Structures are given as C-alpha cells and as structure tokens.
Length: 579
Image (tube, rainbow, N blue to C red):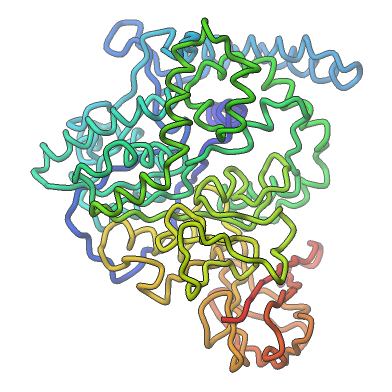
C-alpha cells in the first residue's frame, strides 16, 4: 500500500521515472575505464528528509518514508464518496477535500515558499560524497538509498562499489541551484578517490541537471564520459497538459502497455484499456492535480524548469506574481533564457573541451497525456534530443528537406527509418542514439539499450554513432514485453539496400513462443508459411523480393502468443528506408 500511494503521489505531481528490480542480461566486452561513476536520479528519486538529525526527523518521500495506514483507511470512504458525487453531479469539493486531507502532511512537508525556497528544514541523504558511495551505503546498512536497482546492479558488475556514487538533490529546486550542488559533489568525489575525472550517468530529470551542469561547468575538465538517458533538457509537454485549461487525455490502451513494461511482466494487460473508464479517470486526475497538488507544485523551481520557453512565458504570466514570486522568477528566467535557450551550444562547448557526451533518446510513442507528440510516453523526443519530429502518427513528406542547422553534412543520414525524426538539428547529431518504441526510463530492461549505455558510460570504445555498426543511430527497442524484433540481414537496423532479400525476425520474449500470422508491405513479397512459430530467443530468416523499387516501406506484422488462444493478436509495424 505504501508503495502504491507513493507512486500515485509522485505520478500526480508529475510522472517520474519508474523502475523495477531486474535488468537485462549483462553485455560482454566491457572494460571499465577506471573513472568513478556518479549516478543522477530522475524526478522524485532523491529522498527528502525534514529536520535531519533532530528528534523530529521525518523522511517525507523516498527510502525510509512511511505512510500512516490508519489515515489512509479512514480517508478512503470519503474519497470513494467524493468520486461517486463527482461522477453524478460534477461537484469535486468532497473529492478534492478527501485527497487533500489524505496528503496534507506530506504536501505541507514538501511545500516551498513563493520565492521557491523550502518552507521547512528539508535536506537530502546522502548529501556529501563521503556518505554516498555504494560501498559506504552497504556498510552502513543503507541499501535502501541505492536507486534504480536494475541499472545500478548492472553497473556494479563492472565498477567497484567504492567507485560508484549516488548523487541526491532536492528535486523541488531549480536545476541551476542543483547544478552547483553537483559541482560541489564532483569535487568531493575527486578528492576522495584521487582521480582526475568522473563519469556521469544521468536519467530523465537528472539528465536535465547534468546538461545544466555541463552548460555552466562543462569546460572545467572534471568530467570524462556523460550519458544523458532520456534527459528532460527542454522539459516535457505533460506539464503543459496538467497545468493547462483542457482535460487530461491519458490513453488507457497505452497506459496498460506502459504498465507491462514498467512491471516487466509479459502478462497481457491490454484488457485494462477496455474496462477502465478512460474519459472519467482523466477528468478525475485533472481535478485532483489542479485542486490538491498544483498549489504546492507551482512553488517548485523544478516544475518551471519542466516547461519549454514558450510555455514558461505563458504560464509565468498566468500563475506567478512579479513581486510575491520574484525570487522564483529570477531563477527560472535564468534557467530558460540563458541555459535552456543556449543548451546546444553549451553541450558542444563542453564536448570541444574534451567531455564525451552521449544522449539516448526514445521515440515512436505518443506522449502519455494524449497530445500528438512523438515521445517516450513521458518526455517529448524533441525535448530530450533537440531533434525535429513529425506530428505523432504522421511521417515526413517524400520531398522533406532536413533542417541541417547543426550537422550540414549532406552525406550524413540523420533521418530515422520511420521518417519521423530529423536529427540534423539535434544538440549533438553525431552523439545521439534514438530507440524506437522504448518507454521512459526502461533502458536497463532492454538488452540492446543496456549494452549501449554501459559502453558509453564505462569505456572509451564508442566515440560517435559511426564507431560501431552494432550501435546505429536509430534502433528498435528490444524489451521482452515487445516480443518481436526485425531487420534486414544485410543492413543495419531500419535500412535496406538494393541487394536486400532476407528479413531477420527474432523472438525477444523470454516466456512465449510467437506465431506469425501475417507479414505484408506494399510492393514487397515475403516467402513465409502461415502460422510460422518462433521460440523465445530464436530467429528466422524470411526471403523477400521487390525492395529494389522502394525507398520507404512499412512492414505490418500480426502475431500471437502460442498457447494463448483467447487473447487478441498483436500488431506491430516496422519501418525501413533505403540505405
């Protein structure tokens, strides 16, 4: 119950990074470069502690936090009654009052003043590097403070515990303020380890923090490798949706698939999309957010940093008072009009000074709040990468001309095989990898992404997107939940040549034999028997013809899980462009 309520609370304030406790199998051929590694967590990942060291100490959120089960049980009848009254009459007073009463203590403890400073004496733990290595946390019985178990476990296969550090920050604050804390922390790690440089892995909100640090401190020579995994560099449009006037529009079908991936279960949860009252739940979410959580969240610097510049200008005028909120506005203005407006130049300046920066960005999924924006369900693809994307569900026209604003080398192909992403205008076109179909924060549970992530972070083997053909700029997610992977056997993922005549299909499920019911593409013929089966971990080669006349194809596959006769078949589309 405690975990459930925590997830609901964090999701309602903003969708954070969700993780489970397993990871894909460890990749081979990785040799750690010897630099200490600093792990930066996603939004709400760092614990918040009130009155640390005093008799009144209380963990607000995170490791060690507790929920009053009696309070939950006594509040539930009122909340249920409030939902019923809202459904029947549209009156939300009892509903919002029930949630407000349930979360009152938590919300008050995490509240900030109108200038963005904390209302209470709130800190994080561990704060100093001397307390923050995984070795120290384990020695002190504080394993609960080691985040993202799947990913940290994978890193620990190669990096000694005494060289892996967890950086915690007050995620309510703005990123410029947090970047100064990170600068202090890096100095402490270097002093403790005696090393010249650190490597940084930064996830989601932590990726925005790392990018901010690199903008202000990236030329100072203290960082070697930085991996920004789905960083919220320009925020996320979900904030615009939650704070705007329209109703939330979370898609129940997409949420059910998201839950499957998040929970790492191959159980088919699509039935949830059919039985959950999506429209009503969206209205419910909007009411609870606006009436209960929004008054608290609007004083968080982080919420304003989650807005792109245009949204920030609009919502600043709508929600902030120039006098009362002057301190918050001053910090948010600097973040938007200095750092975020020039982040590409800042990252390239850090790169030119010797920092190896890699960005992992996801695409191919509609933004969770329903807007037709290419995303990883939580963050816009354009926000994580700087790339230009087509409206979700559409493709670039046949005569589309790439932007060429950052990479103007016409011989480089920075257009995704789906013709939906143009990376010529990305912050770092030669150092950004795009994963099609992967959800936010799930790289550790995808064999390909985990391997790429570890190589980028721990070694100097991959300098750019051309370094290793096994890691092309555009690749498909390979999470077992998705079951099927496909590529032409003579080319990199998503590409084909005039000589291509064999499609490789791999079953990446760990549990289910799949049955391919149909395979089709305009102008292409496939030589495959009906109801071809592929066992878990196995692959087949399918002869095909007609590709020489095509420039762009969409292969439609329908497949089912063998032994599951009463579940609906799955449909998956694979996009390919001529190499």
